[in-house]
Structures are given as structure tokens and as C-alpha cells.
Length: 119
Image (cartoon, rainbow, N blue to C red; front, side):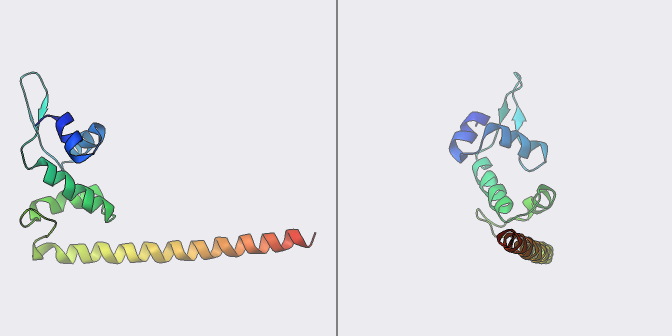
């Protein structure tokens, strides 16, 4: 399957598919003319990449997880679950930081708005 076909089938831009390949998430073989050709598993691989990206995982982590899939879905081997739990905890920490920042910004906005009404 050529890159354009993979793009149409998955709905992922050609540019992103090239990026996934550059990051070691997707593999292709080259024809004599230099065109990329992907195997029949490529759409499933792209779907997995998209799922993991949507879960907030960086490409470095996704690259480590790619060989650990079980079957055709998004189920991963038990040996990587601790790694996923760590990523989950880090995401919780970032959410807490963002919540604190949002609260602080809200306080500044509220104080500023009150000050303007008293002028």
C-alpha cells in the first residue's frame, strides 16, 4: 500500500505518516523509485498510534510500546502496565498543576474585574 492509500484509509495526513515513520512508529519499505510501501497491517498500526497519542503519550513512549501489543486491538502485554501507570500518574500531576494555574488566573481576573468596577 502506498502512502497516499494509507492516508485515505486512515484519514491521517501524509505528512503525519512520514512523521510517524521518522519517529520509528511506522515502517515502510522503499521501491526502486523511492516510493514508500506499507504492509497490510499499517492501518491498524496507525490506529494504535492515534489511540496512544489521544491518550497523551509522547512518541518516545509510543515507540517503546509498539512491539507490546496483543492481537489486533489496543490491548498491551502485562509487562508494560507499570509503564502505563507511571504515564497515568504523570498525567494526573499535570492536570493538578493546570487546575491550580487555572484557579490562580481566575482569581486574578476576578480581582482585576472588581478593581475596575470601583474606579
